[in-house]
Each structure stands twice: as structure tokens, then as C-alpha cells.
Image 1 (cartoon, rainbow, N blue to C red):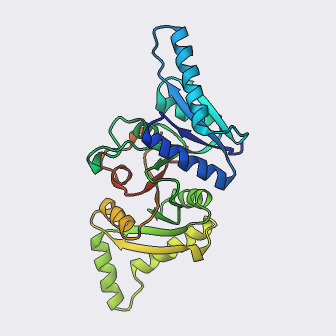
Image 2 (image 1 turned 90 degrees about the vertical axis):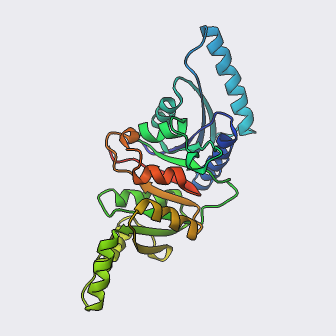
Image 3 (image 1 turned 180 degrees about the vertical axis):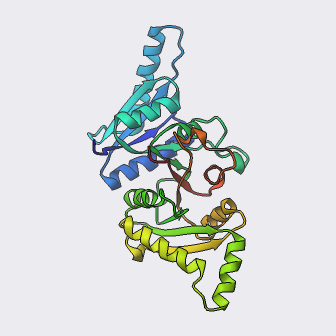
Length: 279
């Protein structure tokens, strides 16, 4: 197995991409990983000469955006479809995460536009993706981690631990409203509640992930709509990033519109880290 050695960030030189590049540079420096700044030139050109000229021009702009070159920062220009080439770059560069920006529109619910490169990277790759909405000057102090307590939970917690080593974690499991009511009734009778059992399982997962319990707040939240509840908690606690997984198989391209991950990605008031399923 090849050791992870980099963070790949995609840039099209837009405002959102500039924000993503700043975030990726800060993250790479903190984690002592190599930064691979990647721009993808469209594959369709009138001639090979035109393609080569576009590639050379993009490389010059990319090098300028990185500033003084260092061994820890690599500019990379590829030709093809942006989401496909970013995924290939992540694989070839042994990336821990792909960082991409979000193009904002006038409407908050369209912050991640259908068909955008960011969305396609989320749906097609096998590498974790960080959607950068916030400026790099805002540190990752608090991370909200919604968990389903399934097989993917330890991997998600480990990823959050590795990428955000100095943050505090709010680990949340959303319980259906009916189950929460039943747990409340059990508590009144003095029995062991479902909530207590869930807390115990969450503690076990935190321990398995190697997270310091002192850095974790565990919360079981009653929720008729887990998607809305996650957004509410993110806003109430002013979290800096939401880290979550998806149940899609064979890549995130199968993730259905309206799923929890999709909803959170679109409406989150902060950065979002999405981890795909294990291969």
C-alpha cells in the first residue's frame, strides 16, 4: 500500500477556486502534506498547437497563483473533463483529500450548482472531498460529525481525526422522533433507554477511531428530518466544517438527490467534508 502524500486542490482561477486553494494550502501546511494544485484544460481544441498553448498559459497562471515555488507545492495541468482529471490526479498523487470550491449563486440553496465540477467530483470519485466555502483565515475549531453508527462510522471519525487534529468534535446521531419519545417514556420508568445505549455505542466508536474523548461531545438528537437537524445544529454551534459519509456504492455518482449528504452539501453554512464508501 502506497502512503498518502498529498492534498489535491482543483482550481479554475475563479473566486471560489481561490478560496479553495487558500484552504488547501493552509491544510497541507498544517498536516505536512504536499499540495498538488490542479487545473484542467478542456479536451476539445481546434488543434494540438492550440491545446498546448492553452496548457502552457494555464501552467503560468497556476504557478503565479502559488507564489514562490517550493518542493511542497506542485502545479499540475491536465487535459480532459475536470471532475475525471481531478479524480485521476488524486489517485496518482496519493491524495488524502480533494479540495474544491463552491460557486455561489444568488440563492443559497443553489450554492452547489447541479452539474458543477464540485458536484461531479463528489459523485464520481473514490477520494474524500472537502468543499471549501469559508476563507482559510477561519480555523477549523469545531467539527460536526453526523454518524449512523454503521460500519462506515469508524472510518469517518478517523478521517476527521486525521484532517482536523486540533479541532473539537460534536458527534451526532439523529434518532427518529418516535424512537426518542419511546426512550423518554422508558426513562420515566427507570429502564435503560435507547438513548443511553446509543451513547455507549458512540463512545465505543470514538475509542476505536483513536479520538481523545475529551475533545468529543456526543449528542443523540431527536429529528423528524435528519437533514434539517444537521443544518440546524451546524448553525447553532457555529461549526466550521461538517464531516459526513454517504451510503452510495461504487462511487458517489449514485448518491440520490434529496439524500442526507446531498441536502447538507447544498445548504451547509460552512465547509463540508464528504467521505465515499470503502471500495
